[in-house]
Length: 375
Image (cartoon, rainbow, N blue to C red):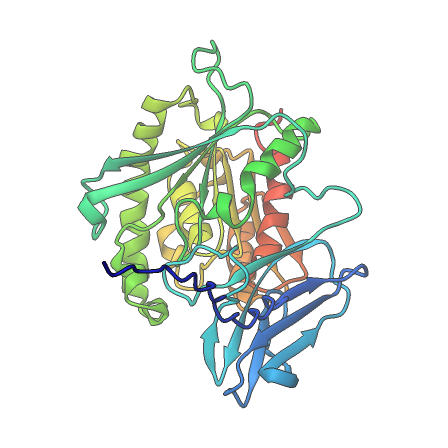
């Protein structure tokens, strides 16, 4: 008989893989509130930083391993959006998963520079409101997927759907290329309202934030569409009908909000500012509180469209028009303010330092909201 003997063969250890390099520290916040930005691209011959609040791209310095670096000066507490340009091509920060919402422009990342104390947009230990998202079939808006209009609604902490007195309501509109959730996702509007309410600076209010396009093609065709006044007018007028005939009735059926003009407000940023001013001033029977932040009114034919505007008939509680002094829309806003003042309209004109950026619009909301629905 043939005997087979088992021979133990020692197991071989798998070859060790080289350790993966640590992730790039792409945005390093320092104790003095300066930030070092880093971007890796060994093939690039030029890399620049786009930083919100700075007018032009900032050249970065190439270092070892193709890592490009730039350190800012100490920055005021804020939420800053940023992106990179590598060889003239826009790039996001692959190491930062906080990304701004946008339908057109290349994506950008967000970085927070905190203050020594909580800032108005910070999430703090106060009662929080609730953010709701809705969709309904629109018969007015053009180009929407399955005709679905999106509406984001903020209800204040303790919201009572059965309260005897309906809540005042603010219709808050985003800018061109933005989305319905933009005021919440990018501007932290819900936390701003939570904090202002906890400080007793605002009245409890419901805030309705719709998708702000009468025709979605107005954003899909690119920024050059702003050179066509007829396209701007078409989108603005169509959105006015969408808001008054569909969005407002939808919100009023779903929430315990006022139908009284003296407890309705409207404002928005950029394109949303144009829509808010145009809609509000054409519907003073529906809105007693009207605002605009960096409003894109440069193509609005207000001299003819609002020729019949009468301050006594309008009887506005507030007409608030704000713009950054470094914004390309500042002169257009000044001209509209001058027109309204010549009509005898009681305009509150606000000019603050800043470009066409979120830093200005958050500040606008922080200062505008406390003025609403006050006696």
